[in-house]
Amino acid sequence: MSAIESFTALPNWLHGAELKSVTADSTADLRRGLTEIAGTQFEPDLLVLIGHSNSGVLALDRAEPPLTWPAVAAWFERLAPRRLLVVGCEAGQWLPCRDMFGGIPELRDVFGSPAPLGVRVARILPIAVPFLLHARVNPGVVTAMSFGALLHGEVLIRRTRSDFNRTSDEEGETIQLRDELLAGVMRALRR
Image (cartoon, rainbow, N blue to C red; front, side):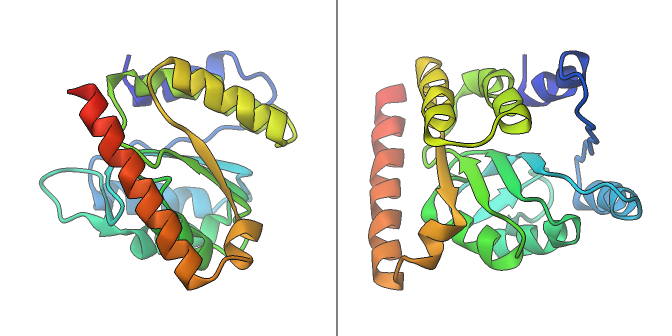
């Protein structure tokens, strides 16, 4: 089961949560879907973004130029999500998260992987999304969610706006280097 198949199956067992989904194979599809949602009164608490990525860009379709993380943030700013779960390689690294916090003022938390994600990534969604939708985010929930992801061979971390607000640029660069080291280790372990 792919990550997108896992996400589209969620409404069947998330009673009481209002879910809207945009399946986009191109930036034109994404723009159209986001415009439709932005025209409603829907205010997402959690936005789940699935795509191919690295610490610099997000690609929806390999035939189109990828979007930089500041461009991605600009696309989602109008929706004003408070939490973001990014299912994409290296999307949980310091630099992409910094760009998300910088471009979406209402954003409080970003959940993502600082490392490459494998084919088992679809297993993260059934673990993570119910916690994020129905539970108050606290260290215990995040630990359980991260442990569940790790059991499936993935790494999932939480970045908070307060972490970014109190971290200097030099500290951020150090954290990014640590994230890149972790990504390299995860790549080597998968070989």
